Each structure stands twice: as C-alpha cells, then as structure tokens.
Length: 418
Image (tube, rainbow, N blue to C red):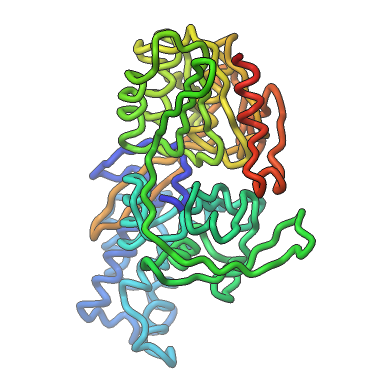
C-alpha cells in the first residue's frame, strides 16, 4: 500500500451486514443507479416532485424514521447531468456512483474514512501483500496537504530524490489541493517503466519548489529484515505491519544468538498497517497481560488490548527508532514498549501522530470502505493523534547525513546498547 493510506491502525472486519448509517447510504446510491440503468423515468418529472420509488428504497434499507432523507435532489442532479451535460457520453453510471459515494464520505472531513473503487481496492491489497507497481512512497495528508510520509529504501521515489516531509503540490501538472489520498495514489501509480512528474515543496531547500520526475517500477517490500551488528546487537527493520509481518519477525528471532545483548527495532518511515499485527509484535516483546493499546469508541467507551503471552525479548535492552514517518501501528508498538518496559529507549524524531482506528468493510463489485471507528491511546493514556510520540533522545537526520549515507540515529541506538 505504498502510496496509499494504509497507514491506518486498521482493524480488518470483513462484515456482510453494514451497521453504519453512511454505509447504508452507499447501498441506497447503488440501488438508485440501478434504477436509472433500467430506465426509471424520474428525470422527466418536475423538479419538485417526489418519487415513490425513492421512498420505497428508503423503506427497503430499513432506516429509522429520524434517519430517512429525501433523495429527490440527488436524483434530479443525477438525471439532469446525464440528460444535459455536453460530454455526457463520457459519464458512466459506475463513475457517477463511485464519486457520489466519495463525496458523501468527504463530509466526515476525515482523510482516513474513504471508499475504494475496484482499482483502489486492488492497490490496497497489493500494499498489504507488499508487491505493486508504483514509485514506492507512502503518502499522507498533513495539515491538509499531500505529504510524503516515507519513501521506501532503494525505491524509485528515493532514487529520484523524494524525502520524508516533501509536500506534493502537483501530480503531472494537476493540483493536489482537492485530491484525496486515494485519488493521488491512483494518479501516481502506474505501469513499470512509465514516468510521473511531481511538483514538491521542501521548506529547507533553497529552491523551495521543484519538479521531480520518477520512473515507476515493481516494488517488492520485505516487511521485516534482520541484521546482526557489532557487540551482539540485533537490528530489526520493520517497514510495515502486514499479513506476514509477525510471522516473519518470529522466524527471524530464531537467527538471533542467545548471547545477544541488545535489540534495535527500527520503525522509521513505517506508516503502519494492521492493529492486530502491532499487538502480535508487542506480545513478542512484552510480558503476558500488559496493555498494548487502549481503544476509545464514539461513545467514549474504552477497551484495553493486551499482550498475548509470547514474550521472548522483554529482558533484553531495546532501542526503538522513530521519526516523522513512523505512523499508526508503528506508534502503537513504540508507545506500548515505552510505557511497559524500563529497559526501552526511544531515539530519533517525533512520530507522525495518527491515533485513529479504521474498520475495513468489503462491499460488492470488488469495492470496499474504510471507516474510522475509534481513536487509540497509549497504555499510559496518552492521546497522540496529530501530536505524535516524542522520543526519549532526539537525534536529527539531516539532508547532508542522508546524502553522505550517515545514520546518526542508528549510531546513537548502537551507542546506547554497547
């Protein structure tokens, strides 16, 4: 899901029944589009006339009396657009339906509550699996601006010069001001070997605004890697919280020597993933029964999620590396280790600050919707949304360090563990 917002502490619940009011409306719009397709003549009625068919659709969906709305206005615009628009032949019922749904969800003013059409849904699945065609950069909305959360190591994005924190102002000369993350992703992704031009703003750069052309490639992302450093220090680089992450991490643990004296868990530029995977990883590094994360729903009810008794690493001194590209599940894991263990040190820079939980609901025709259903707190009750987690020891990684292939943050971690 590089270049998408997977960055979500995502609680995957594939439900057939939809309980959310907004999602009920998704199906209403789908039914309305079908009615149009089969020749319903509402467009020929006067603008003020209410259609019995619309009322019946509302009844079919079983909405409460207080939830019922008059969709005549929507239907009038839908039919008039098909009837009068100068390029009406370019409009498909599918496109109108999908964009209606996206417009509805935009009313939440939540960049993480989104509808994914078949193409976007496929891209999301590829992200979780770790293989896709694109530029290899995680994107997010920061202060209302499309922002590079993390270019992947050795990716086309990194090789072309994209950096964490770059603001993407245009994609192929099209402004991103009104683009959702998913819209931006669909424009930035593309076939291996093709190019995409990005106009970026970089505050610390002398040029400020510059154009970067990226040649897309096939991106394969290993979710976890292990490297043994000097002084028996195990360095784990966790780049996403996907389906296989906990399994791979557990397998790599078998390669760690018994005499290991320290562990580095690198969560820099890790945009997150599945909530359950964050809990699984925390369970490998915490004693059984420790609070990993607290989830708070829309009623203010709180639910604790606990480590699951697989502790293998809690006795070993650990440093966790974070930066402004560490988001969502990365922040859950960093917060859980910080709040539950005295022998853990956070090093780097303040994290991204994404403290919400999304539920993924699969819909018909290979579409899906992600809805923010809760906010989460660290075990100590800290709310980090749009605030981030502050490291215990702040170490900056400058552009000069980057260009000279220096890593003072990792150097500091290794120094602490010696």
